[in-house]
Image (cartoon, rainbow, N blue to C red; front, side):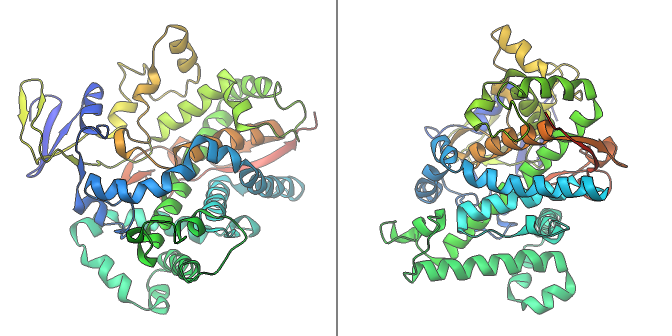
Amino acid sequence: MAGPIVRVSPREVHIKDPDYYDEIYASAGRRREKDAAAVGRFDLDGSSFASVSPETHRQRRAPVEKFFSKAAITRTESTIQFCLHKLVQHLEGAYHSHKVISLDAGFSALTSDIIHQYVFGFNSGNLDQEDFNENIRDGISGLFRMGHIAFFFPIVQTILNVLPLSVVKMINPYAFALKDQKTDVHNRVVRFLSGEKGESGSVIEKLSSPDMPEHFRSADNLTDEGFSLVIGGTETTARSLSLGMYHLLSEPHLLKKLREEIRAVMPTPESKPTWNELEQLPYLMGVVLETLRLSTGIASRSPRRAPTETLVYKNHTIPAGSLISQTNYFVLMDPNIFPDPHAFDPERWTRAAAKGERLDRYLVNFSKGSRICLGMNLAYAELYLAIATLIRRFDLELFKTTIKNIEFARDFGTPFPDEGNYSIRVLVKGIVKE
């Protein structure tokens, strides 16, 4: 141990220094490999996410990347709005019935339905269910909870893969819900590969085209790629939305200021501004960025290996081939960069911009370099549109929800509170009329 540099295992060094982050998570010009053991726990070996070598990663990511550009996501805003309208209907119903709403489950249903529709061309229907189909949310959470066990005992995933669905359902209904969904996705991929035409224009349908590289067009690889997008595109964004809404509802003066700003592009509660229009609102931008900062994205270390490059940190030499990592949390909560880091302060971003400071270079939720999160633009679009819509249309009140329900206390790959899962329950106290 030497200050910010710590040997956390016989084969890995962790460096706590935000200004060294770009050395570890470097751009494509510098070769970086993932750790096979770290990514293998998720049983997504055929995906770009789980690709160890940069060559395999580039081959797998290149055909997918164009579907998640900002322009591509802008073209799919109608899908986001369609799903968001269903969530709005739930909240309107809860107002009339005085029902408590689990907003965390609602956000998981929202992000899950959006990503399924966009990637696979079918709506998973979670928003059509009264309880938002909480089993799917809990299934993804269960996958993360099992991550540490699967890391040290990889045979666990092997056993789950060979067990019949009926047995998995008896052992763990949440794991069954996720496995059943993956089986459905696999069957759809097989149909697309056999030449079946869909009307959706989905990502997977296009990736199944004979025009795509042969190595990419296997049922297992496409299933893994698609399902990695589902997992990444559901839970992390839903958690961010939950955290952001908690802080806004906890501090009414912030909510009031945000609602007043949003009126500029939403003159009526039913107005549907574009993502681009919402991005121009400085206070909303601060809310979104602060929401991301406090939600951290991935909680666990995500090690990289520089196989041919000897890295140097201060007076320490790190031999080529060594695993090296830096945890997002330490960057996002560094008081030298973000004073009073636990405070939800949207204006820290506008203050920094006014001074010409680039705080966004330290916003590492989506990682950096050649492995930066593929779904980043979709996450931003969902955050802007969902927060603006709910704040403009409803008066919400927290119900038996405290900071303990959303505070990062346990690391299961993503942040978990001290007990249970992320949870934010609300009462709909009013529907905004003007």
